[in-house]
Length: 99
Image 1 (spheres, rainbow, N blue to C red):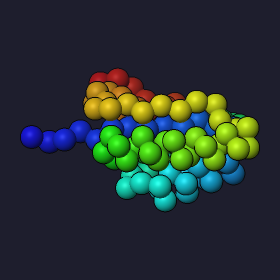
Image 2 (image 1 turned 30 degrees about the horizontal axis):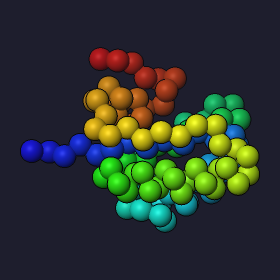
Image 3 (image 1 turned 45 degrees about the vertical axis):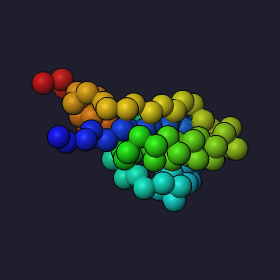
Image 4 (image 1 turned 135 degrees about the horizontal axis):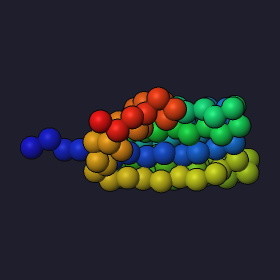
C-alpha cells in the first residue's frame, strides 16, 4: 500500500518573505519543496509535501515567519490530497488543466 504524502501551502506577500518562509519550513521538518507559484511578484504561494506531522510542523514554522513581517495571506495543510489537487500543486496554476 502506497502512503500518500500530505500537502502544505503558504501564501505570502512578496518574494523575499517567501524565500524566508521556505527556508524555515525546510529547516523545521523533513519536507520537500514541490512548487512555488508567483503572481505579479505580489503574491507567492509555496507548496511542500511530506508526512502529515512534518507538513504541519513546517507550515506552522513558515507561517510564523510570514506573520512576523505581516506578509501572511493564508496557509493550509491537506492530508491525503486527491490526485487532481496534487497535480495543481505540482503545476503552475495558470497552466493547470483537470484531466
